[in-house]
Amino acid sequence: MKTTFRQGYLLIVFCLLAVSFLYVRFAVLPKQNNQTQIEQQRYQEVVEQVERETGIDKNDVPALSFVDDLPTLKAANPEFYQNAKVGDWVLRYSNKVVLYRLESKTIIAEQIFQSAP
Image 1 (cartoon, rainbow, N blue to C red):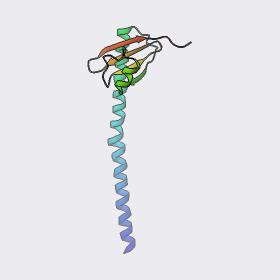
Image 2 (tube, one colour):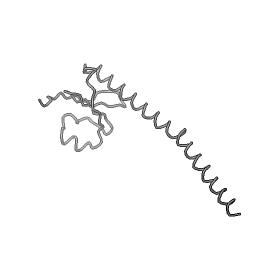
Image 3 (cartoon, helix red, strand yellow):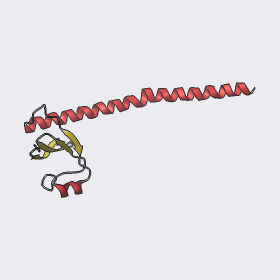
Image 4 (cartoon, one colour):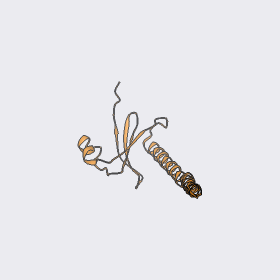
């Protein structure tokens, strides 16, 4: 009698594990992959628009960051971050920094800088 109970218990545990695995595999992971693809596509669209509007070389791949600590950024560079908002994109190219607002799809500020030799 005890072995039958244990076998039934193990079968239930095994079924729960299998269902959990299948849920993660087919419901959770595809959403994460889809979100990553959407973010990559959005990034590419922004980069292409900035390249068109500023004339930056297409081979110059920018480093991307986001405005999150606005008071600190304004203290460091008040002229560039004057009209910035939290959530704006900062695209750093080899010789230029661009502040971009996704909601309005506009360039807020540009700043050219000299690279260190």
